[in-house]
Image (cartoon, rainbow, N blue to C red; front, side, top):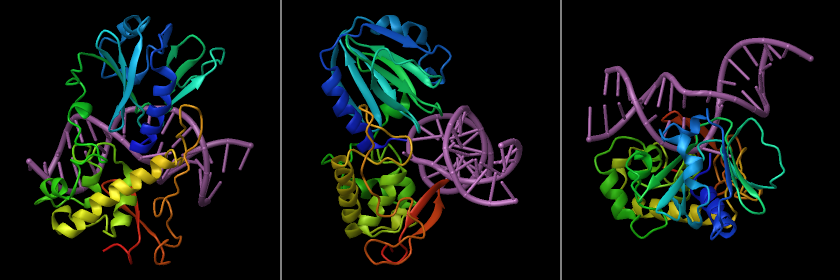
Length: 273
DNA sequence: AGAAGAACCTGGTAGC
DNA sequence: TGCTACCAGGTTCTTC
């Protein structure tokens, strides 16, 4: 569910809440599927209890909680995951997979659809989690630019949309922001990526950065499940995503929905060529 | 290699 | 009201 702006919003809030704090108690749902990448899950609670949190970081859609002892607790929220700061007395419900207790509150991971992942790593060796180990550059970094896209798109017949969502090309871009970036760049998401010219790649790289910054300023986009760790919704309002049949904000013609790579996609057929 | 499609899950909702 | 079908923001695996 959450893409880069949503995970970054959660990361910033958690950094303020958790940095320097000590983990007092951990409660895990032992049968939960969110630990499927972490074979030693029965040791997780014991390993992190009593540890101090040094910092909270983000790479792509992954949250990385840095603990003393060179341990990193990695969390991915999948489609429906939420990390919420709650009162310690709040009862836990059946979708809760992990609770981390601090002196005056607890952090709970809920994930009804169980696409999320939790794992613990030593010494920043994330090779057991290929999705994290093989992430491409952060889209808001200088590395992510038209030249990088040209290198990655060259000769590729897959759609622009499909490649924008490839986490090895741009870490953290998901279905919403791939559509939105294509709209800002006035490029059809259906175009074979290898056919874009340099000018279009410049607009696309800029469109990605622009939409991510806009959404960050709005604390992300709440379509259904997403909440910040303080329980707030995100205020980002999409140009095209989820708006089939409505007016294009640029030209007023009708926004169209189609399926690209098994994912619903929206675009304006008049603005986006 | 790369492209396309299915699978992994549950919950909400649209339609009958 | 109740049932079914379909849809959902991600990742990964299989097949061609």
